[in-house]
Image (tube, rainbow, N blue to C red; front, side, top):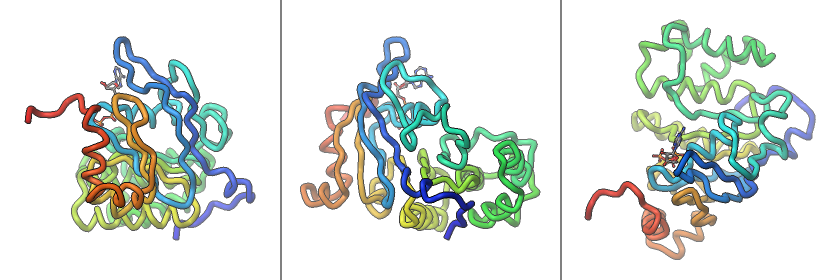
Length: 254
Ligand SMILES: Nc1ncnc2c1ncn2[C@@H]1O[C@H](COP(=O)(O)OP(=O)(O)OP(=O)(O)O)[C@@H](O)[C@H]1O
């Protein structure tokens, strides 16, 4: 159980990601094309799509790391830039490699915590939660990819937010770590949080997510529960392959 930092009941009521006609163009590339969907609390929502479909761009737009060309991305009804304590409302792991290699895991998290009005006790707590307490004082530059993923997850959880996004968090994790992520995602959702998870591992997604959003070439391709998709197709993988057949841009020759 992840400890709550405490707060009014309103934190529990507003845990939602909402995209309204979200569009992002980079030159000739329409990375996100009029995308509208809602991610609700209480279950893991899988975010699927072929390479280049616009998943990471969508997550960056939600986090205000990039500006939409048009449309809106809202967290708890507001744009990221207008959240007063963003780390307490939304946490994300987008790029595990984007950390200062010279700092220890503890100091990396402590800097984040102090600039967001979060106490050092929470740093120790999240390090424990992701299994990095034993290497907390070691330089991040010497961490394996899996350890960096765990550190990225610790950063996302630091503010104990109600909304969480993870972009391919199982990359680099060993089988034990993959199972751990599955349990963590499910328990965070079971606590009433909104969890958006992208991954290309369909078998893992089928075990972790309850709802699925599929995008292709920046557009919404499907929004359904895993149960609905597996009732119509032999497996989630078959559903995904059938639904994205027209959207694959970088597929190898068959
Ligand atoms: N900063 C950028 N400048 C120019 N083009 C970009 C930029 N970021 C993303 N793109 C383009 O936008 C499209 C969507 O990329 P994005 O990384 O969002 O896809 P993705 O679904 O996350 O892919 P993957 O599964 O391979 O990680 C791609 O064509 C990509 O080349």
